[in-house]
Length: 438
Image (cartoon, rainbow, N blue to C red; front, side):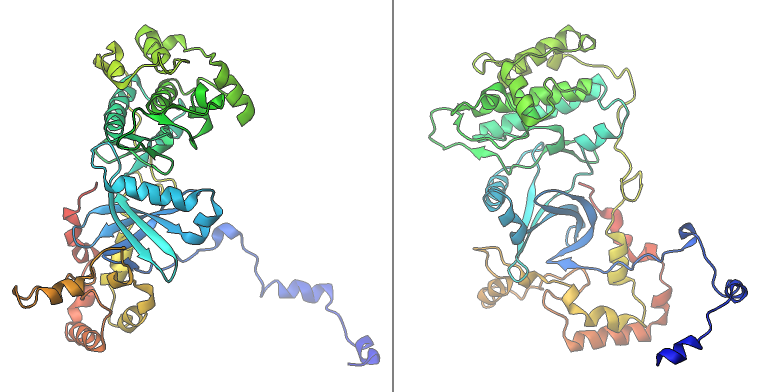
């Protein structure tokens, strides 16, 4: 277009702009209705993935459902690329897996399974499901503390778990409310053994030389930079700071930065609030003793009158808070919408669900080093034992990818049974009523 032609163009007048308002309407963002994104089912081996539970420096934690036992699980998803950027990241994860595999106690988190995906460089640590963390419970109430009887119950369980770890020659090194999880029935689980240390079986004592724990929970010997220290007494100190925190909402030592914090811890000067009473004050002072040699042992703590005393409930307990994301007070299973996607499809979207096999990852894609493939086991026993049925995935098919024949049979059955479309969601997932909420 030439410059002369541009001069002949007319701009819209104000009246014409006003008339356009009849066609263009401005609306407030609150009036926009967002359609929720359809949740697509994803299988990791025999586990059906649910929603995100949390996220830490090492990776995401999601809910899972074991398709064989219908047990609720939690999975820690770790990416190799991310671990390499974290100091000692890969080493800490390998150490945690090695430790958890040999541990079995009601107050220590249980490792259920470890899955690998070499192609995506991902590792899945399947753990028993815990409904909430202790720190999350503390943050949910204005007082930021537990009633005395509730603190006593949790502390007694912490002692049991800690005594078991020490009996196995393991120093946790990072005991704090953030690493203490709770199940639906109120059982406490010590978790996150990433910085823990397993003592040598023939070690003369519990001497340790390194520590990577949270600064506010570290004892004076670490704050002052000692080369060696008693590992078990480090856990006693951290448990003492934890007890101090859950009963008072405070910390015995504070600082504007880590240097000031360690300076205050190194001096060892602190006070216990008067409202704690003489028994609890004496216990806290024994656990937060500056000299590790004089610091209480677990046996000494067990015999303390505050631990042995029965504490009646004088105020309501702190409940498990509603889910922060969904605001669900019951913390219901988040895998249900994914189950609906997996089993509750209609004839129209049958092709869409089963042709997209890249969304479903089957068991044979994951091999734990040293584990025998399931198919090899069946072949090896074919001549000596009766034929065994292969384990089925959650969608009712064999562990391998769905072949065309299986797809055709599935489609023909759905088309020949039109009543299938009208099946209610409740009947589709009726088997969930037997699920164990661990």
